[in-house]
Length: 395
Image 1 (cartoon, rainbow, N blue to C red):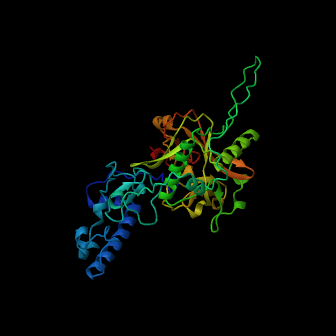
Image 2: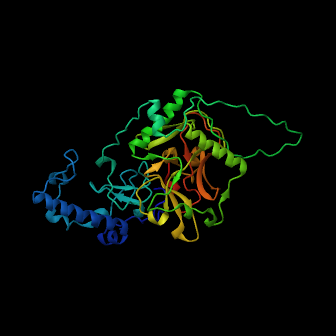
Image 3: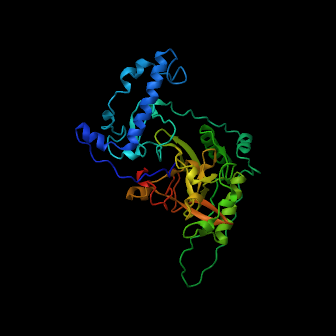
């Protein structure tokens, strides 16, 4: 979920060979997962022995007792010490138990940050590794203008947008520092490319079963609009200038009219859905607003999702807010976080998440921090203002 539980816990020391030392070094997080899995598998195997079918749920996914290759009679007596030498299947290391997750089907262990896409915290619900789950079936959205217009609820699709030349202001002899004002994106002047860009986003959203929304939403059971008060932010929140507000409003209006930013969503077998620039993007361009349901952080601490964004950080932890694009969201949902703790990560980073006070409402914008060439994958400093968020684990 990209904010997760305590991800900064101290790593385990390398285990000694004796069982006693192994017991002492095994972390409570791993032991708890082992106990839960052992009881679940024991109950399941007893059910199978009594003739209650197979494990899995469908014929294709079903596992028999023979597949388990374990005797239910001895299952509860199985020494936990076999988990004391548990290693991550991806990196081969046996450290950081607090960030190790066990597959609920095969018991293989993985660091949450070694997974692609990463899992930001050990989820409370069942979790299965890629070997025990089928790859997602990409639901290709049809490249039909009427269907795309309906999907994104485009108010008026005008085709290729008109471009207006900006007047150049003649400067005097005084050289002033370059202004760092927000810039509106430049949409494609090819209608076919506009449709393809929107089709790629529709494909990603339908595949993960998320409804399109380009605004923050406040559904029942979550936080209310009145709770999103930038004045509660610790240290204050950045105010949006008049010029930047005009650029932001124009950018939002262009998205609503189908003149979307030049972005295309692609599926990477290792990273999942990712976003690339479909044409050059200028420095300081508003690439997207991070949207989704607004909820209290306290309600989402144990979510297993990997896209929750911090929105409001207050002196009272019970009032802190997050953006949750698990049911509703836009293209920002698929833009990748970056490891901004390394030189290589900083070199790849081309966007920054900036939170603004916009008309008394906290909003999170993804802004280009340099010129981005066509074909470059987009990365941003996910929750960079949170010192405890493990961006060091990002690619």
